Length: 274
Image (cartoon, rainbow, N blue to C red):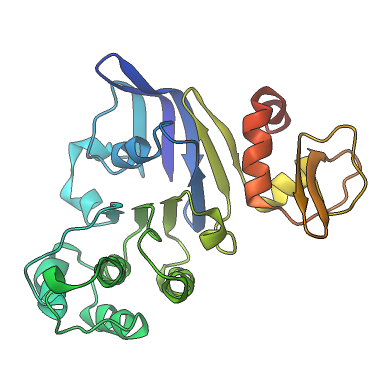
């Protein structure tokens, strides 16, 4: 488990995160959402120990990630938005770099590359942006880590590759792993992310499973305008509305509508999820 308590971080006089507290459990694929500038990338780099909290603490399975203990580094993988064009063939890169992760599987790496339609013998610095991104994703999954921190992993991928990514995440991550995916591309991941974290500069507005969200909020896909709607969006067939669930009736969570409802009514939604 990853426990974040009263976390704050700033770049000089520019505050990015303030008093953030939340918990991340193994066995989940978290979708980390938030407006530009709220600190999603900063939070990921703090979680994996690349940055040190200025205030507050992060505890990962009883360890401080910033201590960079080899035992913890061997159990986690951080995939940045922009990945390095390594001057090596993909298969050689896997054999050499995979040694840093005790559970790394070269066989798994090559299998995922084949599923991603990437040539294992191509040098990574000659690949297209999409092929390079898929190579790094394949390598990350082949490390068999316990904690994954992925920053905009579908950026640069075409539509078929985004589908491949979703399948790979579901197929190749361990059921005990905690996967945290920061994304602006909600539709790319809406079928695999659960729970949902919606981050604000001064708080985690939502950290809840889809089932918990459905208990608190109702997503109406009809044509009748609801007077308590927190958010409404017109569609070709009617509209999507989000409003407090007072009847206990289940509904399908629409993540984009959820995000917009939360940011339009932060205090209301935060109070619902306390």
